[in-house]
Image (cartoon, rainbow, N blue to C red; front, top):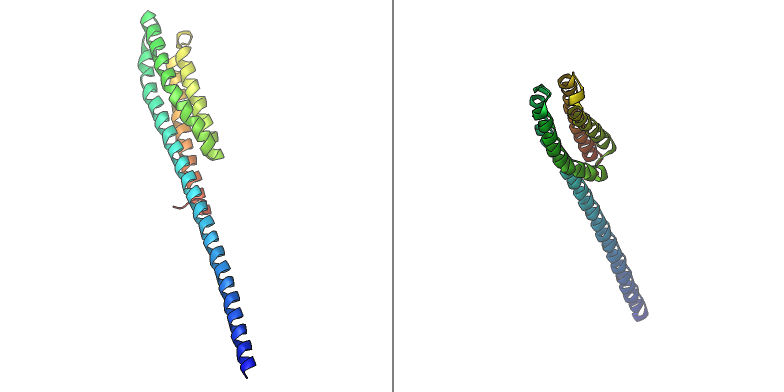
Length: 181
């Protein structure tokens, strides 16, 4: 009987050791899985934040350009003269100075943004250039004001499309669970 008691005690101790080892491995795997999941959620949140910040910066810069574009009709309405030529030169300098931060924000967005939002941004840049070229060539165009009005409508439409694409991209990412809400 003593032999069987020793045998049962050894078997019980061995079983306890194995069970402890298995439970420890299970807890370790669960902790590892939880850490990986948390890290993925943090990366997704950081990615969404970077994307959101890049989107906001581009929209802000687009509106700053738009504020400068509001001065153009007054310049174009002036009779062609040295005063108009000087006004055009001064305003193109201001536009070029504002365009630098706009393109830098756009470059960051191209890195962080979704394909459709980036494509829409290209449309905004295209229309912005069109307005700038309209101003530059206003001396040679009898329809400069009409061309500008068409270009500015197209610009604001492009900005609107870009914002819609940004919103859709963010919504899609949240629905897919790539980033927490």
